[in-house]
Image (cartoon, rainbow, N blue to C red; front, top):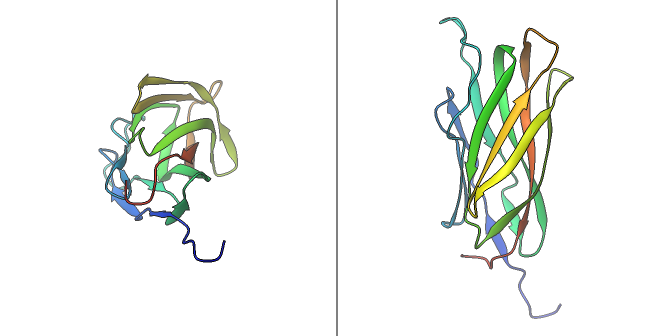
Length: 149
């Protein structure tokens, strides 16, 4: 409407080499942390990169998707990780299967551990592991806080 400014929350892009932790910030209140990822060990020559991919800005009341991207993984059979976020600003609406080089990586289960954390477990059944690059899961969020929260 004329005279009204839309409220937007800025989401900086962050990436990380390795599998220890990835962080996404929506303003200063939201933190999505990739805290644990169990994968089959890789050789020293390979470098697996895990990162959170999200839009830079999201308007209040809108939905957005975050993917947990992974590259150069070898023989991924299963994984588990926790995502923490500011539930006063965003909420998880859905978690869907991942994909590595066109092969679906099914979500075995996901659940809220508490109001600010979900745990996601994935498994590629019937395989000895999937190799390549893609994303482990797609997480849907809705922004419920105001810009600057």
